[in-house]
Length: 201
Image (cartoon, rainbow, N blue to C red):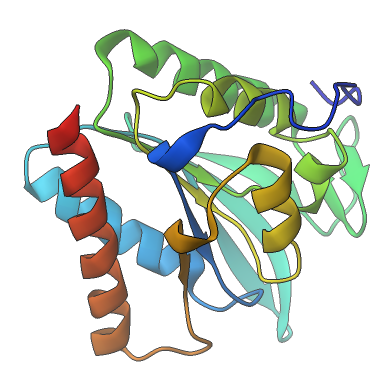
């Protein structure tokens, strides 16, 4: 999974508007907004698959990430700034390959009963280098019948859009330190867009 995968740019041709992007600054509340969206859809009786990666802070700095798999609500350790034997280093974090593999397998298994939405948190610098969730994103990008929300960040959102052919008009931006009302409004806009997409299927 961590071996860099080689493919021609744009190999997943025109994935179309089945993929929405939620972007914002690092630690800008993107995962919180995505979580509120998941909660809203779940309360509507819709099944959501994929995962959210929730970070922890130590001494004012991001310290670790826990991955929450959405179809089961299982939480697994994904990454830490501290050295871990057997984990894969990328920049200043060590990533748990067992969690990566298990999460990817769970997402693919969830497709058997076709979820209303798949959430991937995140499509970031690793994936642009052909690492991390790259293989999973390539596969999901070709599944045009399943609405998806990919979380990304402002520094790479244009590269993500270009690589997977995602239109600019379906990029939703989280403002830095949005208050609760603003987050709820953004989540509401995402829900509205997704419900139209789901109804069209």
